[in-house]
Image 1 (cartoon, rainbow, N blue to C red):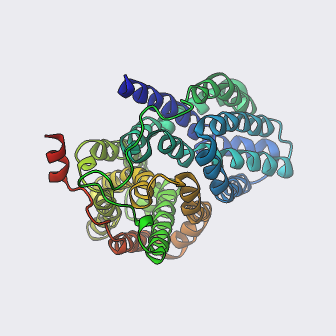
Image 2 (cartoon, rainbow, N blue to C red):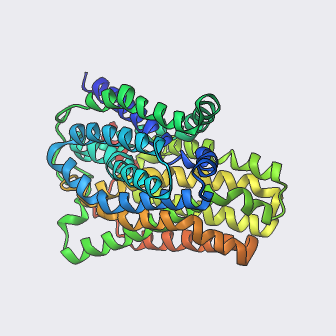
Image 3 (cartoon, rainbow, N blue to C red):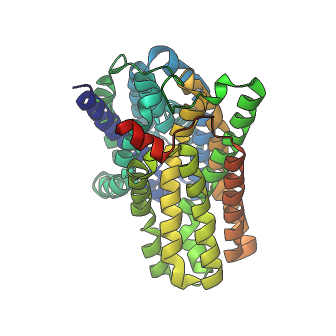
Length: 404
C-alpha cells in the first residue's frame, strides 16, 4: 500500500513538473520570435528577460527550500502553481520591455520554488533518505517536458497566437498543475530510518567535521554550476556547434534531436543498474561522458556527432538525478530543501549566463569552443573525485546482500 501511494505521488509530481518545465524553461524556444516581433523588441531581449528569471529563481531557491523543510512540499508547490499562472497571464498581457521583464520576474519566482529542486525537497520531506528512487522517477516523467511542451506551444501559437498560448498554459496550471500538487501527501507515507543506523548505510558528511561539510558543499556547488552551464550551452547552441564541426544543418538538427531520448536512457540506466551503486560513482561516470564525447568529436569530426550527442545526453540525464541524490546521501535529509537551494544558486546563475558566454566562445573559437565545455566536464569530474565517499557507503555487492 505504501509503495503504491509513493508511486502515485511520483506520478502526480512528475506530471506537474512536466507542465512547469514546458510552460517556463522551454517556452522561449518557441514563443520568443513571435513575442519579440509583436512587442517591438529583439529576440535577444526576450532571452535576456528569461535569463533574469533564472537569476531570480537562483536567489529565491534557498528560501523556498527552507519553507519545504518546514511545512512540506504541498503548500509551497500549490502556491507555485498560482505564481506560474499569474506570471503567464502577465506575459500574455505584456505590452513592452518593462512589462515583459516584470512577467519573467514573476515566472522566475515560480521557477525558484516550483521546479526540480522543490519537487526533490518535497520527496525528501516525505521519504527521508529513501527518496532516491522517487527522485529518479520524477526526472523520468518530466524528462519529456520539451517533447510535450514544444509541439504543444507550437500548436497553441498557431491556433491562438503567442498570447493565447500563454493564457492556455496559465489555465493548465490552475486546472491540472494545482490539483496535482494539492494531492501531495501532507506527511511521510513511510518513516525513514535514521541515517547511518542500518548496516552498510553511510553516515552523512554533515555528521563529520564542519570543515569537511563546507568543503563538500563548495565542491558540489561547483560541479552543479559547471554541468548546468554545459547543459544549457548545448541546449542553446548544439546545432551551430555541430555545424562548426563540419555537419550539415539537417544533420545537426537530427543529431540534436537525439539528446532528449539519450537523457531519458541515462535516467533509466540510473533507475536500473546504477541505483545499486553509490550516487558519487554514477555522478563521476556521468561527468566524464560529455568530455569523452567531445574528444571523439574533436578527433573524428562530424561522422561521430551521433556518438557525442548520445554521450552528452546520457551524462546530462544522470547528472540531473545526481543534483537531487548527492546532497541527500552526503548531507542527510535534515535541512535538505534549504541546502539544495543554496547549492543551486551558482548553477542557476551559470545557467543564466551560459547561452551568452558560450555564444561568445563559438564566435571566437568556432568548433574549438567544445574544449571549453569539455574542460568544465573534466573539472567537475575532478571535483567529484575530491568529494570523499562517506565511510561505509553501500556498494553493489552490499546492496545485493541486503536484498538477499
